[in-house]
Image (cartoon, rainbow, N blue to C red; front, side, top):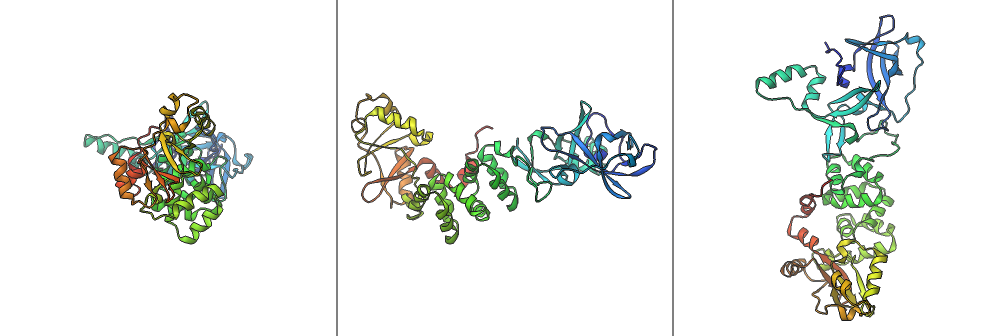
Length: 425
């Protein structure tokens, strides 16, 4: 027999399947489920789904009163209009119990064992998901026994409640229904945490996430996913969507990913990318994977040798390059040949009218695009460099190899993504 309904902190398991009586005291069925609209941080329970002799019946939750061993309708069932649930309504039992959700605080996928409810301001609200052992034993009516056994062993039954505003359901109420703002909580996570979460999902769930995230976030998160899974995700995505995401990725990361795809799929995606982004990726793909050209990025900052320092600063302000691209500022001639390098500090403290050819260091270490990647790594490590410029046979600057690329060379592929996740949320 179910325990009496607790007034302070009820759970779905405390009320689900309880008998429902009509206003006159006759039993008419049982409570099959509760339903909410998942639009608030802590959504209010708005509907009760009753299992009656005549089939399923939906009524307003406010039409029910909670009594110690059962629920009672406030008026006769015949006088209560039957409700129709909107398609976006979430059935607490059907759609959540035993289903996977995303704990956006712990950045992990967990399974729901019970749901915590709370009555506030006269409304019953969904306030948490119980993902611990306690929720599981509660559902089979053994919570008290489990607590006594744990007490005899000198232990306490842990609570595994995740506040609902930190939860992201993975499954939609119906396969053909999309929520208004899908995966909005997941999108707020750091891309590395999104990667951790999607790696625990099924293939269909991963695709759904990458279809619904904004393109920039999707690109950042995909770059953090295990390489083999990256290829699987891109293979399953719609071609246009996959190409959009690849355009947002760093050229070297996009090239690495494309190398893992079948040639036909790779060519299709490159053809769908914007012309400039596709050209950068294609250039990297022309070099062997184990060469400087194969691991370089084509994102770098280079200035003509004859412009004054002030114009260099003005160009940085206009283009707003990523912070990691301004560690080294390269100087090239009219044909794009590498002539020198200067730091951001050198540029800022130089006399505004000084040509960059006079402010630069002409003794810039560089490698040819065909240089083996192990030699590139050795040079970066020996001279403690943050990046090393890569030139073609005519000494034209075509890219750089960054220290991040070297870290990835020294560790198993994909390990860098697993080891660098210390950014606080």
